[in-house]
Image 1 (tube, rainbow, N blue to C red):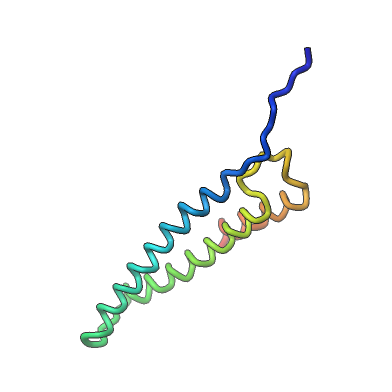
Image 2 (cartoon, rainbow, N blue to C red):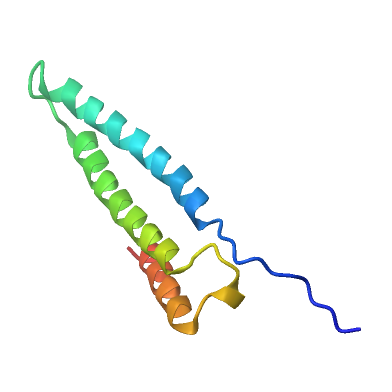
Length: 99
């Protein structure tokens, strides 16, 4: 008997994107609060603030590549992802790894 398991065309990409997006949103709010607190009383930004700014830009780029990979089908079973979309997913993940 040649039986295969029934595969459902379901994705865990969007829930993962929602979790990562909410964490990213909280980090942006905390970053804005940090910069506001450092600038408003008197302008006293130092190296750690500039480093945090660079880290936030890098995280925004990473989140964008992750969102693009989810749009191409990241999180779906590989049977339901076309080879072209699979190659695009790998390009996005490669860009995340080597940003």
